[in-house]
Image (cartoon, rainbow, N blue to C red; front, top):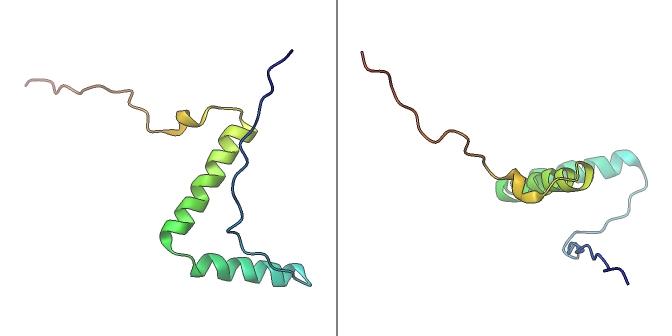
Length: 79
């Protein structure tokens, strides 16, 4: 019997729901919504998009998005 892989579902119940009659109306609503959102909300939304792309499209592990530390120290040359 194979182990079943369960993908966690994001809670999007806090997202507003609206119905529009045209694409332009929808676009204007989204622009207004982002402009009214605070800086923290915009940063959070952008980071969610980055994570979804990194994991979903590239198949990479989300922990690889953290800052990398490849240089341990720098020594200056003596004159």
